Amino acid sequence: MSHPKTPVITQETFSERLIRKCTAQPMVPIGCVITVGFLTSGLKSFSDGNAVRSQKMMRGRVLAQGVTVAVMMGYAAYNAGYLVKNETENERDTRILDPTRTTKR
Image (tube, rainbow, N blue to C red; front, side, top):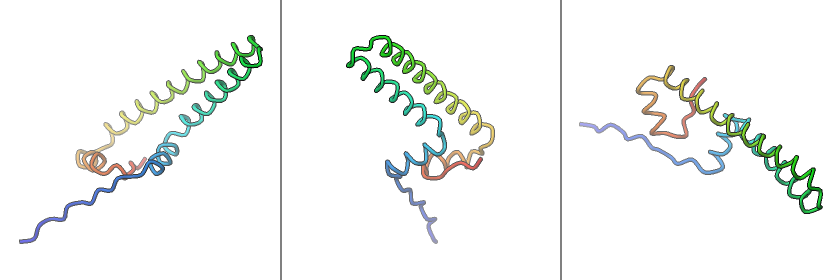
């Protein structure tokens, strides 16, 4: 009597996961870079004593941060709806047990 083979589950590295997430959701890292740009510019303006520009940059940072969070929530809602509609129970189990597997779209 032969035993069924157990699947080998490999842990993806941080860099592999980062690349996978950035390619699946490219607007999130772009929003983060824009937010950091506003923050850096605002802090530099503050240190230079330009209060008006610093205030504008901080408002821009808040706006960019809000848009980035909204985009993250949009991706999460889209992915949750997509997975619920188009995924069988076996596919869901495989996705949960093997995080390196990507969902076809």
